[in-house]
Length: 257
Length: 247
Image (cartoon, rainbow over all chains, first blue to last red; front, side, top):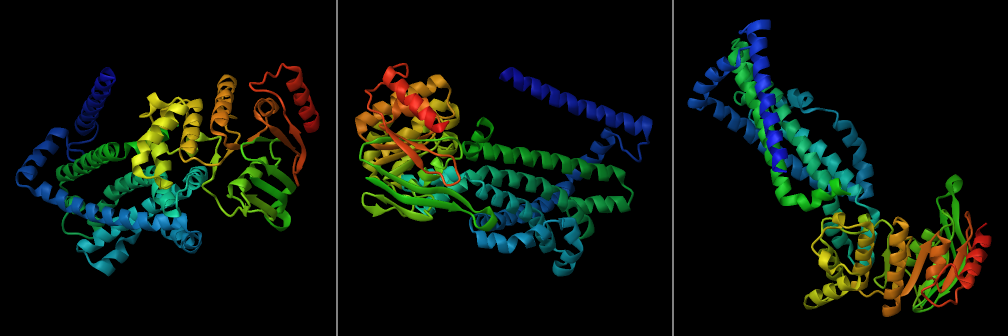
């Protein structure tokens, strides 16, 4: 077990080292350092941005937008998803609308969001909400619908009331689907916040990208890109750790059975 | 105790209309072990679901202790072949039993005693903190039995409960079920497509015909002492008799 972990870590570190080497090679030999700034130059650009707090301000603003949009999107989607999965009439009424709206990516909604909400925080909350909502909604509905009928019947003849079946059987059965949906939605939020900020913001990492592009500051563009990757990676790991810690008994059986 | 009168079950309508059961009559006495036997698709599980109250009859009537069956009742506990799906996989062995006691509104003070007793009865006492995924197929079925017994139903409805187990485990489960049945005097309705299983277990075997419109073609009383040996002349005779009916 410990050996396996050491091996995984070693390979992970190795992969990063190779990536940096390749980056350096592409930058200095194949292309040129202006188009692809070498790693060292990127870190030299990053340092003053970190020292002045500039990069952290952008990160904080982007994360706050993701946080608000993602949280409200998940909450609304789980509530509606449960209703859709449980009440046939609601499903039949809303499913066609959802099936149409879900193809409108957050990026497609940027122009109208700017008109509706301006370039302030609200338009970003809305766009992240939009992206999160449909992913979590569809997963929640599927999870609730797929709660095994046998499990519900078994609980019913043991004496469980409809409310008990719902709370103690259906919702826990759907938990793995809901959490998986949330994880995908989080990744999607990290992706959609960038175009939203590029097109309609005066702060955030997307704005940093856009501004640096206009000024042809490839160093700063790379700082922003690196920041996005690291953030997405770190938040996904944090999410998984939180799920492992709090919901492992609802998740584990999926891999075991 | 359970009376099935002229029961008819039709699924769907128009072109998809399918008459699953037609004219089923059966009286089951308190403490009896009845096997419903028939090939796949003969409607025996449908009949069991009707007895449980999960399915409504299209015609006729099912009575339990003199009152018509409407919906699932706590006195008739269904027992499924797919124990992995029927159990709550996020709860440990003892929590699964506790779940049954909670929804049955058994006073909390009685829980520890009932949990100990029912787990001991099925030999799962030392596995009480494991989760269903960590149990073997036979152990999961025993947990399902423990969970059912904990709420003291009058009738156990079993839908091919040992169908997915290997032959050896199945044999052991038969001995085990008979032992529990003799000790608790529950009424058991046991669905199977395995003639040997029916001959090993049943007081009476109800042989069902293939659908559409299945019915009980014959009820065979098995007056043999238990444990039964299928190599015995008496058991062999019943085995062949049933086999001839199904051929």
